[in-house]
Length: 243
Ligand code: 6PG
Image 1 (cartoon, rainbow, N blue to C red):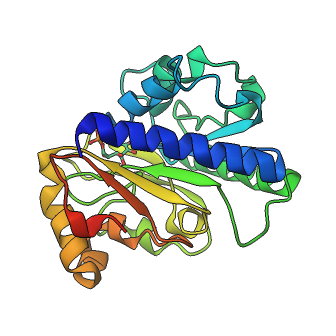
Image 2 (image 1 turned 90 degrees about the horizontal axis):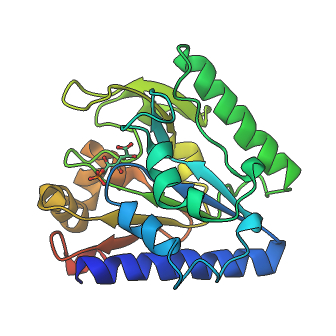
């Protein structure tokens, strides 16, 4: 599908899941992904076509990861979401769970975010075996997702929901805060939104050799209840990837 079709499908997914969740339980918890790909999705959701389809005061925003930079830094995932989406919608401040990338103590930032997530789930009686309603994820050319990078010990984390990591030297900024697989994989639904020739090799492996992919690509380790949905545009489209 074209890049435009991919973002249209992604927007429809967010709207549909939000309406269903709000109808069912009165709120919708959405994890935003970072990087550059989702920018067009967020702009689309904030557009007149979509912005009036959801009672945004019932939507709670989280992030899959954040760079350890201030919220107004050009590399901040929060800043990108704020500029393209959050600043255009009537969202109460208390509905936005920003990761404090500006803290000098990255472990403290991770712990604070984990505490906030935990309190949210307790307050909103989210069943213990389910976490977020929808998590949006990207894939890097090395197969990372959120800020879970190949070979990182964070991939083996079984207890913590949020950790701080040092990304590989080829990734800037290096210091990051990220959700871990235990909490990602208990999300009710996950959706990868992928664009860019550089991801083609990773996606080909995930589609063709899933067991091998699981050994080397963190994106392949995402295994939510219904299995992740893959939205790929024409730059990486592989039919067998669409589950
Ligand atoms: C981040 C993201 C990361 C991103 C991939 C793809 O903070 O960088 O969370 O996981 O989704 O790196 O990034 P692009 O969309 O920019 O290709």
